[in-house]
Length: 391
Image (cartoon, rainbow, N blue to C red):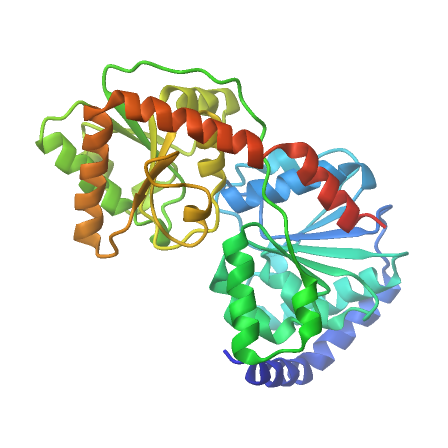
């Protein structure tokens, strides 16, 4: 969507919802929020997922400020719940009230309630981790309140272009994401001041101990959601082709992939489902040789960072921010094909390369580990987010 058209659309929406928002503002004044903190974090849910884990990492950096977390989306599994529900943090889980399209006027009402509470707080700061409700609330906030957005994927850009005057800072988790926003701004000829609001902070991970493994078969793992953009059936097809060729390789799947593939037709693979036990998950990371992804689009998945930190080889489609971190034949392997059948063929060929050349796999794994240590340490991550979020 173009900038001017998006602005007009948002103005019309604001006019239409005004009576409900006004009622919410009145309610917010009559029933003020009893919370000690002035930092408001808008997150979708506490489900398992890379972007949500980044939200938890940000909370970890600022939890001492007693922030208020607003959850707005119906959870699928709440697998990361323990990372958010902690002492001193106020949780407002609104999904039962606002995530219902049949009663969307209630969503409008709560935009007014939240705006009233935030506007009356002392020196408030508002942060949104790719959260739709964050975008819906910020037009109702005072102009002097910092409104900070975290961007992982460019799929949000057609919508958020109409809100760039309301967002005071846009944090990009990859350089590729920042470049995508700059291209959009160039195309729409927006004012130069909006470019100055773009910032780049790489995500963090806890660096594990490095341990090389020696598996009798090449251990290949997919870790992620069974979402359409992950294209898990392509990995299933690669696993089937490798099995038919009788090659020494074993595939495992971690996540809710049963939504998109039938585990029963792949008896030669291991399916873990959603793994909530951290020690078991660490054992899967340590015991694997290769992470494989065939996504249609990605930011920088947290699982890529973790597997790099463990010194594993990442094989991934060369989409979005992935090539910024994975250099082909140096610290990983990139699938350049775009057609699905070609992706399967190239995936098979790259896995055969690793089987036939173990020394290359070991060398790329060590390079992967070195890159992770350089880029993904937690100290800089927390320092940057505390500087931005704490007033």
